[in-house]
Image (cartoon, rainbow, N blue to C red; front, side, top):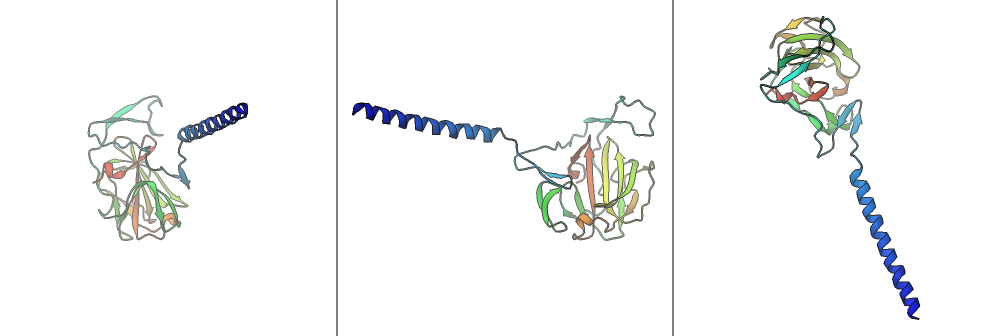
Length: 217
C-alpha cells in the first residue's frame, strides 16, 4: 500500500515539475520574439516602446553628404556639412495632422497607419516655400501623393513637398533659397483626399524619415 502512495506522490511531483517547465519555456519564447511592425503601403507604424527613428536636433552635428548624380566627386568621397539650426515653415504654421511613428486613423484610407510627415493646413493655390537653401533633385507625380518636389537641403537633409498643384515654380537641378516659392498647395494626394486642404511635408536624413519638428518650430 505504501508503495502505491509513493508512486502516486512521485507522479504528482513530476506532473507539477513538467507544467512549471512548460510555462517558463513559453514565457522565454514570448520575450525573445521581436515586435512586428504594422505595414501599410510602405508606411511602417512602430509599436509602443520602440524608438526606431533617430532625431537630430544638435546645432553643431555634422552628417555625411553623398554626391549627387551631376557631381564629379567619387562615390566614396564624403563631404561634411553642418546640420541647419532651424528651417522655415513650408506653408502656414497651422498643423492639421502631426508626425507620428505610431498608427493613427486616416479618414482617406479608413485604416490606421503611421504618418511620416506633417500636414500644414493651407488654402489650395497658396504658396509652398523651400524650408532652407538647397537643390531641387526631383519633380514628379506619384499615384498616392500627387505632385511632389524633392529638395536636398544643406546638411544632406531631403525635404519632400507633397500634395501640390501642377503649378510648379522650379526645375530639377535648380538652386533654391530658404523662403523661396517652389509651388502651390493642391489636392492631388489621393492617400489624403478626405483631409482639409494642406501641404504634406516630410524630412529624411541618411535614408531615415525624421520628425520635421526637429528643425521647424
